[in-house]
Amino acid sequence: MKISESGQGCFGYKYNPISSTFMRYVNKEVTWDGAKAGCESVGETLALFPTLESIHWLDQQLKAVLNK
Image: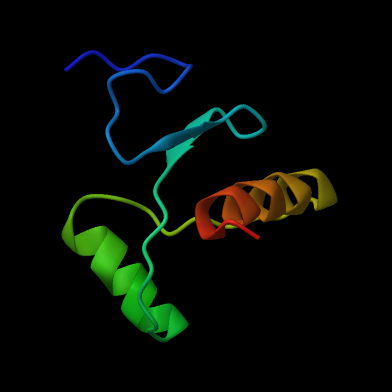
């Protein structure tokens, strides 16, 4: 599967242009340690949002996913 910056061909992932990474939303209540372990178990990294710009981007994405 070809991965592009637009996220085309990346089922379930959303491209984050701020961090140049792909993100996947998982709707599961776990601890931070549990989320980190879950990500690492499938070769992924738990996302961190260190800037206000990245937090605003996340907020917009979650509103779209949760239809709020």
